[in-house]
Amino acid sequence: MPDWQKLKGIKETRAAKVAEMKSILEKAEAEKRDLTADEDKSFGEKRAEIEKLDKDIERLESLRDIQQRANANPGASDSRAFKPAIGQPETRDDQSAVFSPLNGAWQRRSLAANAGQQSEPLSISKYIRGVMMGDWKDAEAERRAMSTTGTGSAIVPTPLSANLIQGAFNQSRVMQAGAVTVPMDSATLKMARVAGAPQAGWKAENAAMNVADGPLDSVTFTAKTLAVAVKLSLELNEDAKNADAVIQQEMSQAMGLTLDAAALYGTGTLNDPVGLASTTGVQSINSVGSLTNYSNFSVAAQKILENNGSPNAVILSPNSYGILDRLVDTLGQPMRKPDSVAALSFLPTNQVKLQPVTVTITGTPTGGTFTVSVTAGGSTQTTSGIAYNASAATVATAIAALSNVGSGNVAVTGSAGGPYSITFAGYVGWLGAVKVTADGTSLTGGTSPAATATAVTSAFVGDFRQLMVAVRQTLIIEASREASDATTSAWVNGQLFLRAWMRCDVQVSHPQQFMILNGITVA
Image 1 (cartoon, rainbow, N blue to C red):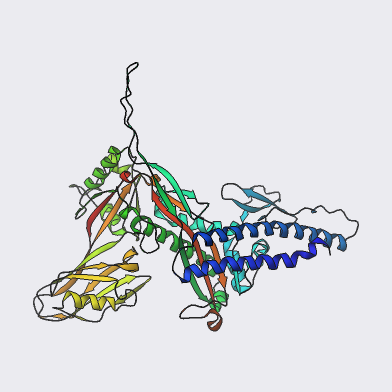
Image 2: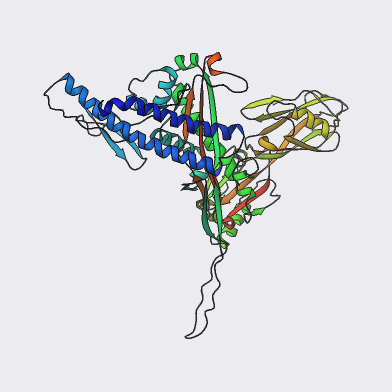
C-alpha cells in the first residue's frame, strides 16, 4: 500500500485524539472546575500528537495529489508538485500564499497585474458558514483545516481560532488600555515582580554601601476557563446570509467584555481571575460622590506618579463618562481637563458595576405599589408590585424571583418603606452590566409619590501596562448539530450549537500603580 493510502487511518486517529481532548474539557466543565495537573498534561500531550499527525496528513496529501495529477496527465511536468506548509491555504493558479508574521496567519494573494490587491485572510466566518450550511464555496482552505470529533462536532484549528482571540482582545477595554499578553506553557506560571522600589545611594571609597534592597516577590498565573456559547436555528442559518459574521462578532464581544469584568472585579471565588478591585496594594479613594470636576482623577494620577507609575488610562462606566463629557465651566464652555487628566485615555464600558443601588420612595404615599426592573444577563425583568411600605426582606424576595437574578444573588437592606440599598452577589454580582430602575406610578396617596433608583459606581485609573493577561492555549471553537444541554437539543430542535473557550488568568505586576475611585454617584 502506498504511504498516501494510509491517509484515512491517520485522519481517524487524529479525530480520536480530538475527541479525547474534548472529553477532558467536558469532564472539567461538567464538574465546574479547572483541569487537574494530570488532565492538563494529558491535554498538552494529545495536542502535540495532533500537531505531528497534521504534518503527516499534509505530507501524505501532497503525495496523493502528485499521484493523482500524474495519473490524469502522464508525462506532463508538474509545476505544482509541492504542498503548502501546515495551515497554508490552497491556491488557484492565479494566487500565491503568503505568511503574515504580524497576525500569524496565512493569506491568499492574487498574482494578477494589480499588485495592490488586498490579501484574503483565512476566515472563521467562512468556517462557521461551512459547518452551519455545508457551504464551503471559496472556503476550501478552511474546510481542509477542520477537525471532526466523530460525534457530530467540529473544532476550529489554531490558525483560525487566533482570529477570534484577537477579536476578543480588540473588544476588551483593559487590552485597549495597554494590558500585556503573557503566554502560558503549563497550567500555572510563576513570574517575579518588585514589591518595593530599590534605593540607590552614593558611597565613599572603602565604605559600606548605603542602599536599600528592592524586595522581590512573585505572582502565579493559574489557567482558568473563559467560555461562551451560541445557539441558533438552522432556518436562521439558511435565511440570514450574515449569520456567520454576526456570530463571530458577538462571541468576540462576549469574551472581551467578560475578560474586562474579571480584570476589574474578579474575586477568584467563582472560577474567575482576581481583578484589580480584589488585589492587595491597589490604591483607592472612597465616597467620591457626584462628578462635578476632574479633581479626583488628578489626585489619582498624582498618587500613581508618587509610586513611580505612568498613568495612561481610565476605565469607567458609560454613565460616568457621559457626566464628565457634559461638564461645563462658569461660562458654559466645556470644562478644561488638567494636564495630568488630559493625558489619560477615558475608556467607558458597561462592565464597570452600577451598585449598590438605592431605591427611594418619595412623596409619602399611603398605599399602592412600586416595581423594580433589573437588566442582567442580556434581559430585563420586572418584579410584581411591591407594597409601598414593604420591608427590605420583601423587596429582596421580589427581586430574587426574577429569572435573571435568582435566589441568593441579591441582598437588600433598609427600613420598611425605604430607602432600600440593593447589592447583587454571586454570578449576578460579578457581572458589570447590571442596571436597576424603579417605577412608582402605581403608588397612591401623599404628594406626587414616586420611586427612583440611584446607583454608585467606580472608575479605575492606572498604568494598565502593569496588568498582565496570561493565555494558556489557543482558543477552541466547537460547532455541533447534535449537542444538547439541560433544556434543549440541537438535533431535536433543528439548531446549531457553537461554543468557544480559552484558558487565561490575570495578574498585576505593580498594584500601587493603580487607583480605584469608589462611590461615584450616578443617576
